[in-house]
Image (cartoon, rainbow, N blue to C red):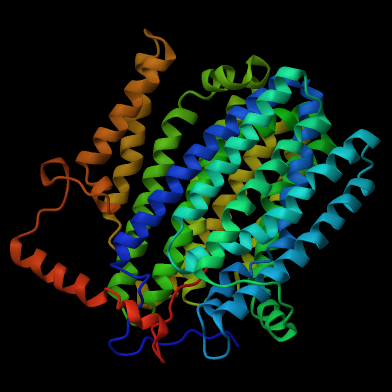
Length: 527
């Protein structure tokens, strides 16, 4: 069994510093990179959407939706379990464990590629669309071991490498997409840049990961069996969640038209940046929570509180523009043909804000090993989502799919919070400042919509953004997220004695560089 070793008294880890600063630093890296990747991804999608017909863009969207569904097989949730073993538990050498884990994920990538081709055949894809699927499917083969490498960086809290790799890969993808668009690209050609992106990312990660942990392909059936067995609840839950979040586009393609799939796909492009935000916050958070549980509950609660504030701030900030002005933004980026989906965009953004908190709740449950019921939660969400889509898509098309997503997410979040409430050790949490976020958002939208009556929408959106930031800052929400803020702008006011105590605590949790090689080091993080 992959067990978490208790920290030895006085033992430390060279990759660790104060939990809050580590969490904020790694989250900042990931957020900055995800923002850059979102901009590059949006830019590439704009070029593709403007180069292909609405019907062809719908096909393009469906292909990559199917690729996303394959993470049910290629990920299976084992990444969240793997880091314990990779860090060197009582049974396994970190290098050997990491090598075996990455090999397993590579095999799963090949299985996923085979499955996506079979699904294409079963769905009756035409010859051209099946060929595009076969080329795009190479992304699965490359991205699966690439994602496995992330565990190495996450366990060492050196996620800057992952961040830079993503930006470099997306830059190469955008450059090739732009060249193909200028040359008059086709559906088949436009899937090639995604493959190039994964090649570049993998080439960037491999040597850097190898410097942290020596890697080689290794088949270890015992490790594979352990990983797969312990990840069963997450595997089932993650698989159901993947279907839950992707099934609406597939159902649209069967119950409506490819044009509707394309419009809905553009709405989902705006959702992607919030999805990236969830990953940016929860990936380093899981490491901090596992290190803190159960020996340092104040640090555990502080990390959860700061993360809740941070995802709330991010969700509110995104909502200012995408709930307030989705039509003009969509027209600017994708053209007026896609602006008809603005109401779907608004509904999906609200749903994704709830998903941010669902991801946070799941991360907490995984960190305390209380995630056994997660598959049942996602099964309820999936059944509700499919049932609602069957009723709403024939009547409301892509807007019906968005409403089904929102309703299902409300239920999923409520169930996860009920499970989290049973973890009595982590309560109470001081989340009073979180109410500042909806207040700031409401005032921002009111100001933006009012100004929009007399000035261009860009200026109105700017006013709304400034109002949101000002209220969030002065209301203490920014400081509550752990972002340094002067006291006169809402930051905490502390006397010198309190600061001295905090400094002493920080010093106590810092890491001894030699601890990583000590006979009984503090082994902590998970993925």
